[in-house]
Length: 142
Length: 142
DNA sequence: TGATAAGCTACAGTGACTTTAGATAAAGGA
DNA sequence: TCCTTTATCTAAAGTCACTGTAGCTTATCA
Image (cartoon, rainbow over all chains, first blue to last red; front, side, top):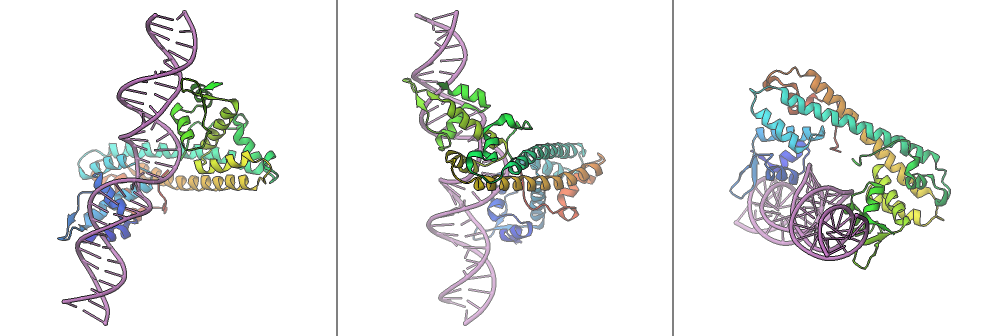
């Protein structure tokens, strides 16, 4: 029987995060000691490891839920797991593309800046004037 | 005098987002008509465009706040704006690196999967067993 | 005048957690 | 056995950067 802290250490997951996974139904409800502390089996550790690894590969919790369902029913076709992974791959590729466009523009920004006063700062100038952009970066963010 | 919808259209920002920027103090409080609707000047439009462009380049709202402060005090040295931009560039480069590692592993995952039953699914297998990873991907996510 | 579009506030929801506060339990040493 | 330290518990709020909803009011134009 493993305590939550052991799962935490072995998977590099914060204790609160494990409880959160239980709360949203991604981890099964753990058994409890008489004092009310959670205790886990090896299979719970495996499941958590699966979740964490999938998260590290960028899968959303929803996707992970699907993958876990598949994993729990091993007689089904693999096609669905494959398509989830391919979708994930496409998303990753798109993010890379977008970030590379950002990198290009940021590089240009800092390259043109020669450290004079803000009045002539290229960084701020570029940010002010979108029309100077080399790239169109429509989407935002992470 | 520009209505909020005009700013919205010209900058591609949702109306609610503009109001949100006002709420958190990123945009100045707009003047109002007798009926209570917000009205803006060109300079507000410029400021919003600056914010949006910076967001598209991945700057956090906190960084943007700093950049706007600099922009409002044009006699200062440009060094700080430069360092914020460089920090941003580093972050973008790191994200690209990480995503490329993910891409590699996802590619390997889907390449090895031949569409048989879940029991032999390489995708799920790889997710189950972190030790098979080619890469160490410590950080998570976006 | 009256229809329609645009705007208003206030609040809840998103994803994937993290943080905090305050209390209780377990484990190990003297 | 007692004590101390470490681990765990619950419940709720906070994070980031918005987005969505409900129900109402204002502005604009024919």
